[in-house]
Length: 108
Image (cartoon, rainbow, N blue to C red):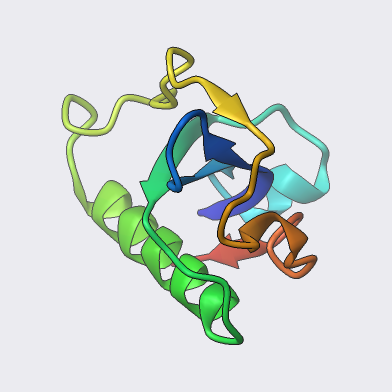
């Protein structure tokens, strides 16, 4: 399973960070440029630091690991919440961390 961060934004009127990932069933599927087989959105209360990319990667790896072992009823393919209002106010400086955008995370 492979995930790619496709959006990092701020939840409107909060200091929370919104991270949207697309998910492919395999690296081969991603390499073929197949459409994502799922997605998920994370709402995180994180602070910009040198550890931020590691922490975000860790959250995504944990989610993918649970998703790969879970049942489809617990993890629907497309799980992002479009109702979350997002913006670019970035009160904690998270959106400036270039390493986050386009990050790829793989789990077996």
